[in-house]
Image 1 (cartoon, rainbow, N blue to C red):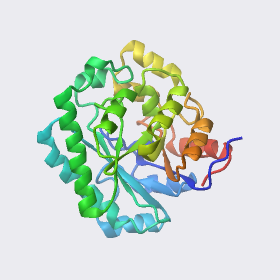
Image 2 (tube, helix red, strand yellow):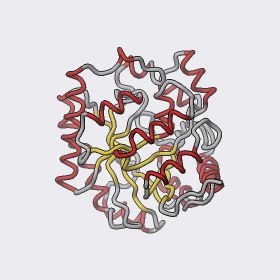
Image 3 (tube, helix red, strand yellow):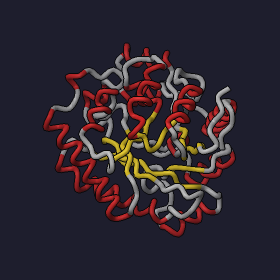
Image 4 (spheres, rainbow, N blue to C red):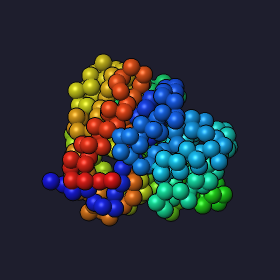
Length: 314
């Protein structure tokens, strides 16, 4: 049995309770945090700005009273358009200041800014999520704008707050496929921008359901992986989404990202690979739950029980 390394802990995030960027607000934050603790987690991400208290004292109380560590915060920016960079930087810094204000809580983990492309904005990428072809990728000018924007924002975050930035490859956005992820990393400063490796997005974005793809990605990208998201993928739903031409949102609504252990992401081997690469810190479990898709508390508990069944984990 795969043993979870003692240096790896599992957190969760508001998206597992229905608060997902671009899809609206789910369960109220106080209940979500209470249920996260009930399910056995001790770390959380921030969620959409304004979902948790924006007042620093109130945010600190919400976390400290539940003995929670703040792991990071996701923020999407339309990086392919230079005209959107200044506004995006402002939003990201607003979030980074919140993270920095609670960075002393928890176990010494320094929260990460999780920067992503503003997914689902451009119709071709939104419609073809999960089966992107090369002609839908950025051209040279697009890559230059995209990566300069990401570096600009990461640099601003570091200069003002001292926090690090990881880029989140995301289906429905402009960095989705393994080739696009590798291009992004090759074009950005490895000391400035890291990667959050999302197992479900990586597999769905690869256009296949082959479990080996995830392991190959972990090995190829290991030097840039600063953070990890655990998300599973249903091969059956993914195949239907691709053949039926479902948009990214429709695929999520159909359950393409299922409970851990019910899909095809090889989590025992993933944990082995992370251990061999020396990864330590937090892994955030994410199971995107839209309204009417089930009971988030039950799913969050089942996901953690599954991971503990692989050999442990806090």
